[in-house]
Image (cartoon, rainbow, N blue to C red):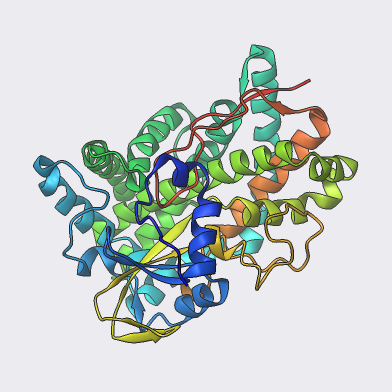
Length: 406
């Protein structure tokens, strides 16, 4: 018998501990209809992988094809802003299906090959050292403020070809864009403002790169405009996507992973014993154990049967990485952090044709941060016993991470 499931996914308890809540749904009703938000909640690892690989049946074009209001609710006065936000997001290449998605992805793929992303490792290593040196000198260390936030901004700014002096601009824009995954009723205001400001900031750079291409991401996307794959608006919006996707997820990987190690001292001891040798598996387990992204949304392109449930055309779905990555049918002792776990078939970066393009650079940043922290601070401890998380259904994000180094 299925026990009662509270459909409010934005309660404090669910935000603080998604694993108990979505784990309960996974065990009791793995294809669950959430009446409150009118969407299917998918929680099994195998179902998630199946959904991602059946992209013809489960469309990414949610923003273009879903007429329903925002959830959780926004202020009624902001409905026009929501329409703008939906239109903006609909132009991101990840919001397209084949064949358009494949053509757009091909433009970007060469920039994000594992080999090319590995070339950023020396920069990541040097920047991690510099940021930790500066944090130590200040004495009051918050790993989010002092490392997890500035590191991906620095890397993304370099990728985009943004001058060093303008990195604070990029960070300020990112702060506004991060409202995309939040739950506050006024979130459309800063989000739409950030989208407009991002377009205004990047457009002159695109104009310049069309005439004088460089070895950077903006030049790559601009080449897609030259070849007719992207419109100008799509060029600008996909630059915003790089800033958003490459920023929030890496922040969360660093903070969630570090917090997981501090709360699982046996695994911290294993990493400390061989930081260089264990940093790859440690990062993979951090990605599985407390994933940066909690859920991804899709819309059904046709009627589909799944585990005896009838999913209707145009129904919304969300698959929950938080539940899939702790599925006992896929992982032994799924609620235990274990950096010796191998293979580690987590789905922190999704699966199928929409597998995250930035997975390699996120891994590089996570590996170098965890290695450096393990080598520098054997007694690293959180200053707070309780963490405060952003009210997001999309991201698993602490608001701060003050630590003691000794």
